[in-house]
Image 1 (tube, rainbow, N blue to C red):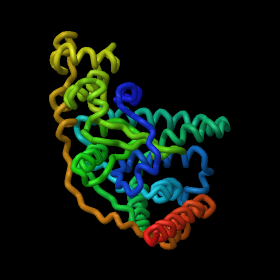
Image 2: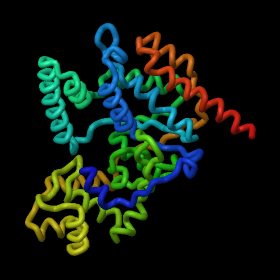
Image 3: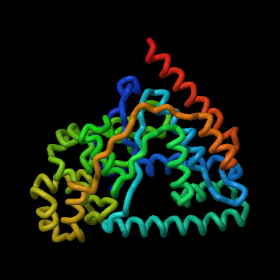
Image 4: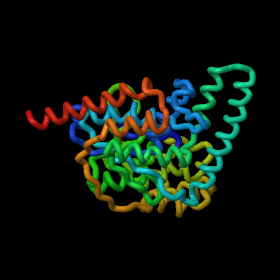
Length: 325
C-alpha cells in the first residue's frame, strides 16, 4: 500500500528511546538494509565499497553505520529476512525490476555526459540485494552476534507475527504493511536521526472504528503490494465506503469494481506464512573479527567503518558497566 495512504490513517506518535530500553525488535532486514545501502551508494565514493574486481559491498558500510543506533539505545535487533516471494507479489516485483532497469539506463547516460551528481542519485535507485550482499550481510551479523531469522515468505509478516506472539516487543519497519499483518506495535524511523515513531494497531483501529479485516479492506481499496486499488478511491473514501457497505465485497459491488484475487490477497494479510522462532538476545559482538572481515577480507576503506565499530565497542562497554550499577 502506498506509504502516504496508511500514513494518513495510522495512529503514529514519536516515542523517546528511554521508553524502549531493553526492547527486542524484529527488524524487516531487507527494508532496513536497503535504506542504508542506498544512502551509502548515494553519498560514498565507489572506491569505498567496491572491491578490486568490481563487487559492490556497500551493505557492509551500511550495517556498521546502522547497528550502533540499536546498541547505544539498549535495543536488541533481530534481523528478519524475506523468504520466498509469494505469487501474489509477482507483478510488484516485475514492476520494480522495470523501474530499476530504466534507472540503470538513465544512470549510464548521466555518466556518459559527466553528470556525477545525477549518476550517483540514479545509482542509489538501481541497488539490489545481490547474492554477495545477502551472504556478506549474514556473515557480518553473525560476527556481531546479531540474531537472524529467515522468514518463510514476507519479512514484514514474520516481524508482525513475532510481535503479535510476544516473541519480540515490537516490529521494526519503515513501511506500513506490518500494521496490516497484525503487529500490535511497529517502530519506524530507525534509520533516521532523532527518536523513532511508534505505530499502534489497536489505537489505529479504535480511531477508525474498524476491525483488522476492515483495515485490510481499506488498504486493498487503495492498493497494496499485492493488488491494484480501485480507481478514485483514497484512504478517507475507503474508510467511509467500508463502514457504509460493510466490507470489501460490499464496496466492490456498490462501485461495480473488481480486484483480481481479492479473496487470496485478503487471506494473505490475515494469515500469511510465518514460523515460530527462538534466538539468544544476549548479544556479544566480536568487533575485532567483524572489522577484519570488513576491512581486510573485503577491502572496505577503514575510514568509512572505524567510527561505527568504535561506537559498537563503546556501547558494549557501557552496557557492561550498566549491568554492574
